[in-house]
Image 1 (spheres, helix red, strand yellow):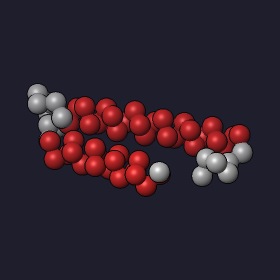
Image 2: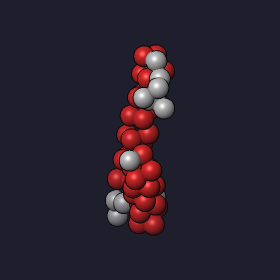
Image 3: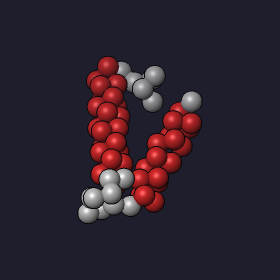
Length: 59
């Protein structure tokens, strides 16, 4: 989508991409921390799996 976007749409897509990256990295870090209230290795692994699937699909 970013390849065919004009400059305004490109900036919006880039900002969305950056926001998702930060949110998912934070969520992974928190859910993988053993002392967190929301500690869940299954959840942390699901975030990692989603990211891996997304990267492979974008290739």
